[in-house]
Image 1 (spheres, helix red, strand yellow):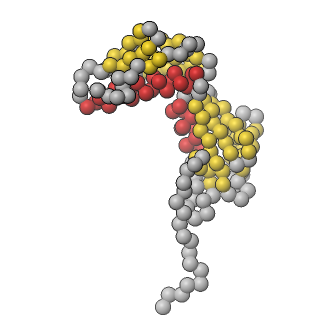
Image 2 (cartoon, helix red, strand yellow):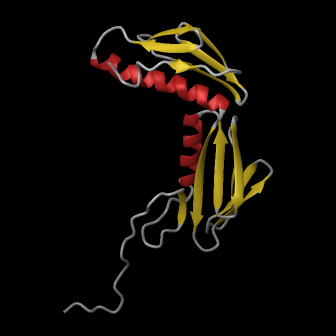
Image 3 (cartoon, one colour):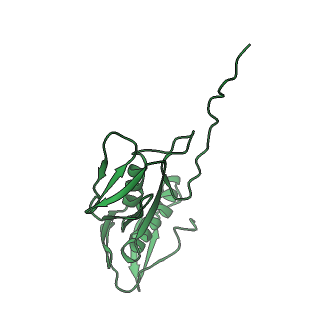
Length: 182
């Protein structure tokens, strides 16, 4: 039995969960999320707790058991507290600034890069070299953070670029100047 899959999910006050044909809809103070769960998983809601059960011990069903439970739990956490990802910008002259709801990046290109937030995502720029992405959908927050990071990924020689907060970038040694081969 999956250790994660067998744990019941507690539905907090102020959150409504609707389950119809394995289509889960969760509404809460931060928004509304819905997702289709695999047809093999059996979802039951009783006394404010959601349980996920699998039909048998086949490998596919064992894998889906914990995944399904985690997806539903992330939906509930997302509509109550939300998720956020932080990005750091490193490099001389590299910075970000808010432009309405969008972010205006200066990343060493010949033009500024403007990124609009998708529906359900908000950007925050507490400092010119820090970006915070907020949203209810964990998957969407991670996807947007990845797309912003890919505008200028950190390079290995000077470490310039956009990186996740706390990300370690392995540095390479540059060319040895003045060394003559004999």
